Amino acid sequence: MSKILITGYKGFIGKHLHSAWKDTYEIDCFGRGYQLPNKDYDLVFHLAGSSGVRSSWKNPWRYFKDNVLLSRKIFKKYKKVIYASSSAAAEPWRNPYALSKYLVEKIAPKNSLGLRFTTVYGPGARNNMFISRLINNKLQYVNIDCKRDFIHVFDIISFLKKLINLNLSGVMDVGTGKAIDLKDLVKYNIERRKSNFYE
Image (cartoon, rainbow, N blue to C red; front, side, top):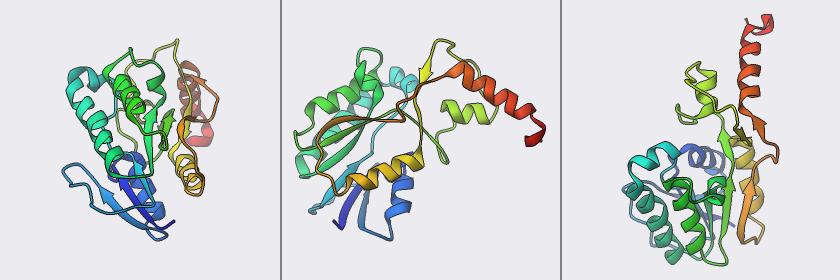
């Protein structure tokens, strides 16, 4: 496999994927404002779209357009697509973001593969993400009843590489399989900052 299209190559995961593979594969990139290339690809990694729960309430149409309508175009144009979904798609009634990811899964072709990423963190993550706020001492509040499965972006890139030579379809969860209590994570970070080892 050599010809790959990465959509959303300037995004968090897409940027890491492009950096890791640019010297190994023949890669084309698609970003906001681009025209979809009229080429045949061995594989399309569709990572483009709008993310974030809070902002989806402010502009639900943007999420429908960026996530659902763009995905529909890509599914129609290319034969083999692996696309980014979200663990939020399991509960589409909760917010417009979750609903948009759920709808993408519903319109996806049978031969495509949807990846329900859990909470991805690492270098280059958005500043408003939980881990980024925690590390930068900008966390304003914590939902004490919330647990999340955190997975590092480098692990995601390693996983995506394994998918290249596999012929999988449907929808799968992608995470560590272990949920962490947010209040425990905050407590750990506070204690770590007070440790002499880190001073």
